[in-house]
Image (cartoon, rainbow, N blue to C red; front, side, top):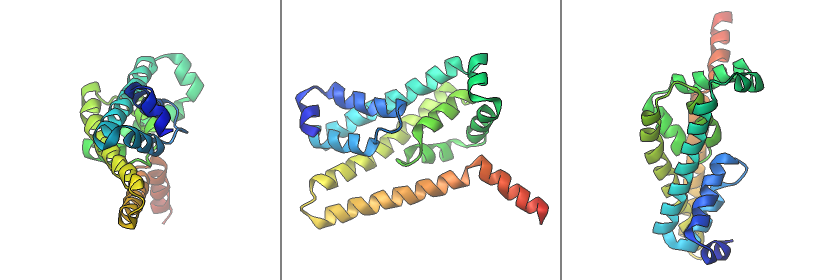
Length: 191
């Protein structure tokens, strides 16, 4: 895959990273690792960051443009839209930054939730762009460690970083889950 990406142009690396924001089954970790392997750590990071940030912004702005259409409310249901709005509406920029920067957070849902919420465009971009840079940098480090797999310390460091990011993303997701808050409120009321 890295040879194929390298033989084409950097736009393929950018496009694959952007495509991940639109189609969540594409593994961003693999895309970033392939970009780093094909273009080196600096340009691999840069192409991955540009693509991922562009894809996230595209999802946000498209959803923002169609969020008021009645067809979207009917298609998704008012409860899902309310849940998405509530998910982002209560978040402070620092919490949203942390959520976006973690590679295991479903970025397509976060971009969708920001798009349907009343989160400001400029505020979203000011949070998303640096958060994506941190996420892509950590994945680039992981991709670089996979290239240096002959050295077991690089491989162990990359695996430790991946595990740490996974655990932090689970903690942040659980902490900001609106359903989890409702369940805890019901438990407190019944006690």
